[in-house]
Length: 328
Image (cartoon, rainbow, N blue to C red; front, side):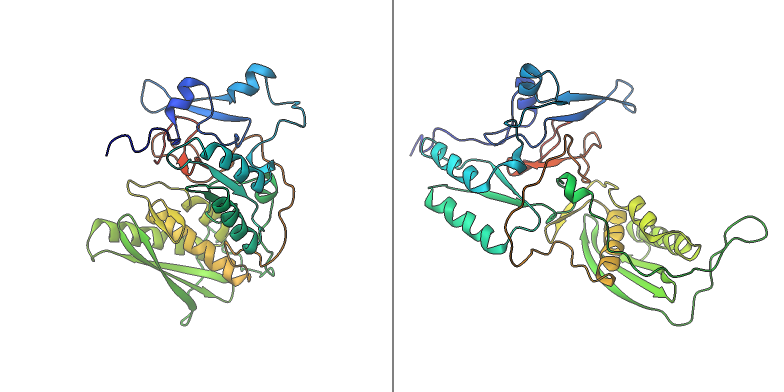
């Protein structure tokens, strides 16, 4: 059987940059972004602001755009499905398109979107709920949310007479948890313990004893424990660890684990979130999608393996708008 399908609509990464157009049939997710280009020396980068070709051609920039210029997050998801259904009638294969949804979308609404897609004749549909995968794409409202505040605990001053900070003594008994996480180097077991002042130490075990991965994870854990018992804010430690890229990123329960340090940082973050009574990525049981505004620039945490810039979730695929890299 030949030519069973003639027309398809896959995501186009680098080709869309060369052609100065969007990467698929879906709306643009931002009107401008910062492109990061590696220079001839192979080490330095040059950054410059890039506007969406249509925005630049019609308006010049995105400073004072009219109300009818909207991005993906400002379009009703049901209208997106119905529009895609019209195009699907003339397309043999499925259409690569991502429907962006707010974080507090009701579970019933997500289910209804899939049912609507089926009724409209779609051969495939992808939805992305904001916040369900850390670091993919955030709106201004989501990015401005602050972590739940925890009661302040007075930590003893660790500054010694020599002008250096000294770690507080470890108590004989500590309490904590151990979390298993898949990484590109194998399963890592991260143990987080705390004393009366908060997190005081982190242990991690990966691979066989004596191996390079085990040595690196042990070194990272020792330095983390030293920093925590010397009065360093755990959130500062987490921010330094998260986002470190490795050669073999893997998916773990819908979350991209970039490296061993990234896994340890995310384990610490989840520990603090559970302690504060927050469940990461939980879907609200009821409610309707509110109106919310897309930032003029994408805010992501996941890094591109080619240029180190941030990536976004578009056309059912991870893409880098800075250098054109695509996961698909």
